[in-house]
Image 1 (cartoon, protein in one colour):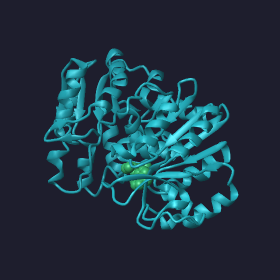
Image 2 (cartoon, protein in one colour; image 1 turned 180 degrees about the vertical axis):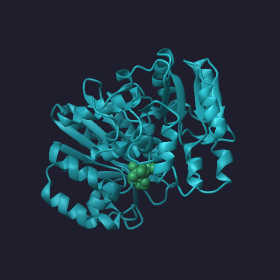
Image 3 (cartoon, helix red, strand yellow; image 1 turned 30 degrees about the vertical axis):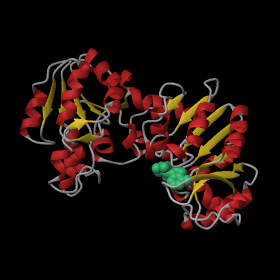
Image 4 (cartoon, helix red, strand yellow; image 1 turned 90 degrees about the vertical axis):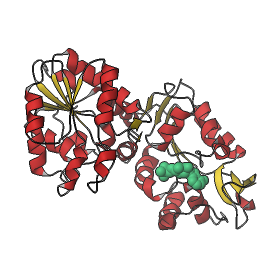
Length: 390
Ligand code: AMP
């Protein structure tokens, strides 16, 4: 078990909290402040306990000097200040005297936000390659390190692994919730069903290999289903195929043919913005593109979901960004009632669940795409492994 923020006496201490403020920003305007709002619980707790709060986050990618202005955390400091209803000191640097002085001047309960950690990527990728000296330097600015950025925990960066290697550390409330939710899957109430979708099989091979052994059913939709169907000899027309994964699909289908449930029909079109038609697997023409699961498949999936007690879902079941191909994803979301344990992986599936009105309806909607995928693959996340044990 990892230490949490609650395991430390924060009073009069400089607490570095790695948050995830990687929010969409356009022309200095925040388009969605969900991630800032989600971090408030941990920040407010540290304020209440009388800590001097130092916040660090990345935003976007910094490859050249010109990437800096559009990826500054300054607009976020303004929004955070509104949400906390108190001043947030923003420091435009990621190192140096101005930063060090501002930290020294912090009083108990005050909050400071440092500029985007990835500005350091212009110095030999210091942040993203976990430069040892950078991690040590950032650690020297505080007394305790709290990691609450789940979305980057699968990466070994200076602002998570680097700092944590040099300070007493713990996780914040957001990461604690993520870990507790995924832990349910170690001992799932059965039947345990995995729903997988999205575009490429290749990205989900690790998840399939890990979960096929422990789950009762794997329902496959999205574009990735067509790679499986192709290996079974169906003509899948012009659907998206992941040729690198043909051998994997053949092997896994042979081994687990009763567990892996594939679509029997699809919503097809000859072009993305064309007329749609529902077709069975054996009715595809060469120019048909499968863009969503069909109504018989929805029924089959619903029947399995109805008898399941634990469900984990990663990847949309169709090209859900376009309304006419979102029915499969929506219908399956609708069928997940709250008597079941439902865990939704991050990334596209989380956006679909939130945008289609299911924000608070499930056991857990993960905030991290890559990180949740790696947990489902059974991997350890470096940003969490490095945190002190209780
Ligand atoms: P992934 O990042 O692999 O989880 O893939 C997510 C993307 O797959 C989303 O943008 C979906 O719109 C897309 N997707 C899902 N099903 C299909 C499909 N049948 N054809 C094309 N794209 C799809």
